[in-house]
Every structure is written in structure tokens, then in C-alpha cells.
Length: 262
Image (cartoon, rainbow, N blue to C red):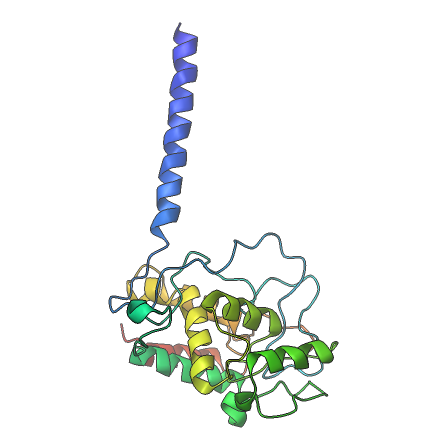
């Protein structure tokens, strides 16, 4: 009898631990931004062991493919936080993307910082300079369908595009998740909309709520935008075909402190 009771107690303890774990995972799925700038929606399954992906920073890499074998998943191809809220428009008015909610000022300043490391002077019309076969027209004049056609027609070269240098896997994931139609033009507004999701997945809301350390948030951003440095001053993807960060750690840290004062 004591042996049977001990076994029953072990089973009950195990079940209790499972319930606690499930509750903890569920609790990560809500947005901490009070004005509903981001909405709940899981964006991707949890990544398994990395077997490929992790393209180099598109603003500074030269002739690189869209993925690098054996590298860690990154650059937004797989969500860093799949349970994060991600969309930035409200659900009222009968449509998923209506009305448009204004982004917090800190998001705009953060996007400007990211763009300074990724896009150069071309900004929203930036195309990775290692792409020997450029798009037929400026990115902001292209539709999502036209961008995908260009990608499919030019294999073997990098295809990072726009102010935030979206690689194909990232672009397609975000477009699918946000319900963007193929006929939608790759406007500055759409590019910002897609980048907002990546910022939230990196931990924006958790950071604002003091549930994520500043350094962790910065590291997550560097895993998505490899022109940003990690604390060593190097790119998270340092060493892949000559990769290096576009900004110094001191500058990145100072700007983050300016954007998000303690």
C-alpha cells in the first residue's frame, strides 16, 4: 500500500508540473502594450535544431546566398518568440488591418536605428548590393508578387530588400502571417508594418514591462538584424563571408538608452 501511494503521489506531482508549465507558456502569449498596438497571434512554430538559414547581414555582406549552411536560425526567418503578439492594427471596423493604430514613438526611433545599420542611403528602396541581378524597378514600386517573381527568377544570389533588408524566408513568413495580399505594393508603410512584428517578436513589450533585460532585447535584435552588434562589438553572424556589424556596441548601447531611458 505505501508503495502504491508513493507511485500515485509521483504521478500527481508530475501532472501538476505539466499544468504549471502549460500555464507559464500560455502567459507568454499576450501583448504588454496597453494601446493594442500589437495583437495576439502566434507567428511561427518553435524552431527545431538549426540545419540551415541565418543569412548574413544584407547591408554589409557581399556575394552571399540567402542562407548559410550550418548557421543558427536568425534574421527573422523563424520567430524568436513565436507566442508574441505581433500585428499592429486593430480588429474593429470589420477588417484585420483596420483601423491603423499609431506606432509608439520609441518604435519609430528604433526602426531608424536599425535602418542606419542595414539600409544605407537607399532606405526603403535598398537592395542587397551583392545581388548581381537587381529587381526591374524600385522596391517601393513593386508588389509582393513581383518581388517573389524576382526572387524565384534569380537563384543563387542574396535577395535582401527594403529598409529592413528582409530576406525571402522572413518576407514570406511575415506576409503570410499578416494576411498581406500578393497585389499589395511594398510601400514604406508596409515595410514598417512588417518590421513592427519582428520588433515585438524580439521582446519589445516584455522589455517595456521590465520583464526582459535591455541586453537581452539588444541581443535579440542583433539576431534578426545582423548589422547590429552584440556586446563584443561583433555581429551575431561575425565570420560568415566577412560579416561585421555596421554599428559599434557603444553607439548601439547609447542609442538604445536614448530611445528607452531607464
